[in-house]
Length: 120
Image 1 (tube, helix red, strand yellow):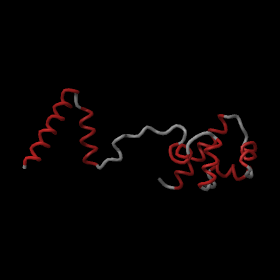
Image 2 (cartoon, rainbow, N blue to C red):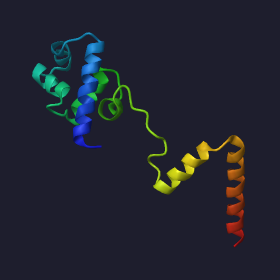
Image 3 (cartoon, helix red, strand yellow):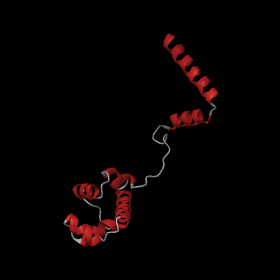
Image 4 (spheres, helix red, strand yellow):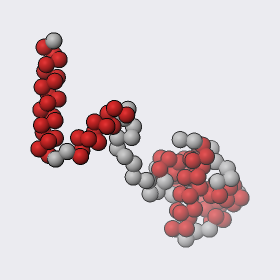
């Protein structure tokens, strides 16, 4: 993930959390002992917080560092097969499109192929 994307997620998350808590940037910056302008930079995406500051922000808002930096509060639903190599994605997607009966047949066929290869 690019630094720009992380900064965008941090910015959106901080603003959403502050608005949800009905707080001002001034209140939060005082609690964190930072300048209001610094907090504003984080919230507008003008600056990316350091790792230590990101940890403090996440702790302050009672969220994980992952939620602050990577997923946001409302992570997008992702395809569970996206991280697999393309041939595996095709197999898994096809398998999930099969009826339960066809899935069992497929599993049986895979077991057959496995046993056949072991004999060779």
